Length: 335
Image 1 (cartoon, rainbow, N blue to C red):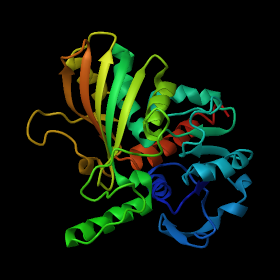
Image 2 (image 1 turned 135 degrees about the vertical axis):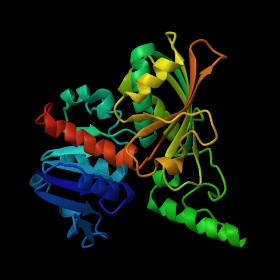
Image 3 (image 1 turned 90 degrees about the vertical axis):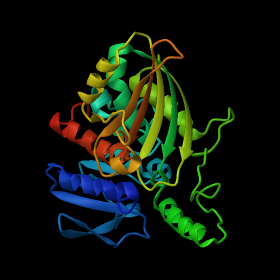
Image 4 (image 1 turned 60 degrees about the horizontal axis):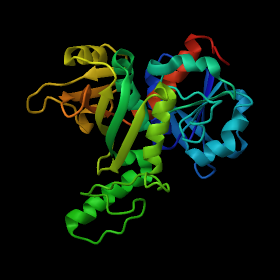
């Protein structure tokens, strides 16, 4: 099994390396691939240094699976070329809404891997990936009618440069120095920015529309979803305040049991000080955590949840590797 990671020097690429080190996937040759400026760098994997290849002249016929973790423009330019030779698992948004490309969270809709037409599988947006893991067991039991979600997203979702900017701005703010935003529309240190990605004509941002469209593609069109996405001065992990309306009545006991018994999901919900998960608690952990489970008594069959997960791990790298594991386990069925 030969594997390539495109964008190996970025946040998600490096996290994919970490996940592969902990998994039992048998890798004969691992190829790290990145832009020309990163070519020649060396990154350790299982104690050995691996030199980074130049994406522009990399031979994808040498690998069976290629993880793309380098953004939409790179996927647009190179993913279909790579897919002529190997299976592509793409972390960018470029192919997610392509009807011929399955959008997959293995715990939720692995059966969609039976319908691979372009040799490309899309990884959902990190906010969507953690959300649908919490939604799936509840949707199966009570049928979700409507979702209102507000996200509180870490800067790591915007890349390494944004993480560096938060660190630098924090120092400047504490020293009382002037701050000029570079990767954000406003100061991110000690602030909250209700704007992720570009605006559409109807006033929603692209990130908010991703959550709506991707959730519907994964779980079904009968679900209505509206989102407000906010960037917070947090390094890692996304949080989501989720309001659900079901078609069927529910009990909190059944909700808790369904969530806690679902693969990849864990309930941490004690009605005491600190009896819930925060972004720091979720960092470095594989699960999607659910806290603050309570009825919404203002609507019929309403429920409120607090959902938290490591966006680089659960929302990106881990999900991509789990897609590969599922395919390998089933002898690349659907290819």
